Image (cartoon, rainbow, N blue to C red; front, side, top):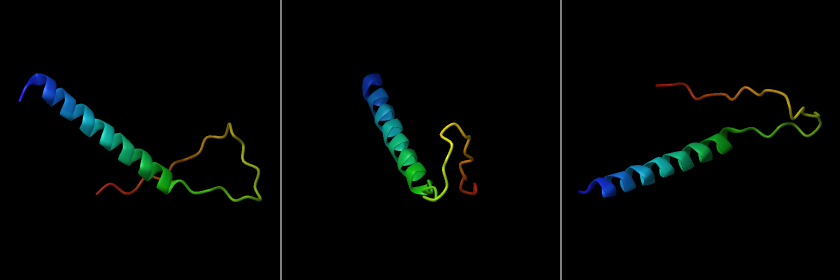
Length: 52
């Protein structure tokens, strides 16, 4: 396997990982309740799944 092929594979894997992470992040994001006005500048704590 050439260096170029290895780099290509690594890039593809990294892209897939990034897509999965983004998907999980969106799935974990809870929609804010409609009755509360949210401050767009407020810092939000993102709950992380427990590390096994």
